[in-house]
Length: 161
Image 1 (cartoon, rainbow, N blue to C red):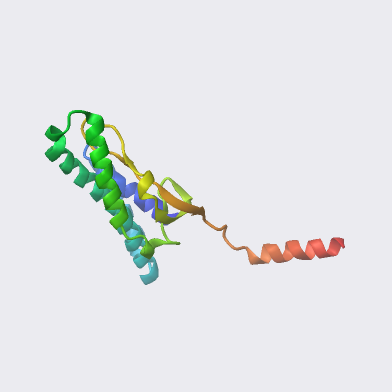
Image 2 (tube, one colour):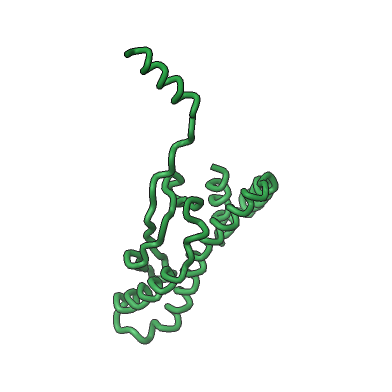
C-alpha cells in the first residue's frame, strides 16, 4: 500500500499544471515515507519505480521521435504505426527480471507484473503528446497469509466429522 501511495504522489510532483502547495505536501509526505523504509524496502522501491520510470522515459523519447519524423509520413496513422514499432523495440529492451514478484500495476496493486507483452503495446492517438499503452503479463497477488485463521478453520472442519 505504501508504494501505491508514493507512486500517486510521484505523479502529482510531475504535473506541470499542478497545485504548488499540493506538490510541496506530496514531496514532504514522500520523504517521510521513504525515510521509514529499511534497506530491503528501499531496494524494492528503487527497482519498481525505476522499472516504471522506463515507460515515462519511453513516452518522452517517442514524443521527441514524433517531432523529428512527422514530416516523413503522409498520415497520422502511418506515423502512429512507426512510433508503435519503436515502442515495441523499447519494450523489448526493458529488463523485467529484477521486478518479477515485486512490481504491481499502478492501476491495480493486486496484479503482479511478470513480463511485458511488447507485441500488444501500442501508441495511442494524440495531437500533442505520445501516450502509450503498455501491456503486461500479470498474476493476482497472493492474499496475505493468516496461518492462525486457517488453522482454526481446519480444526472446525475436523470437529464436524
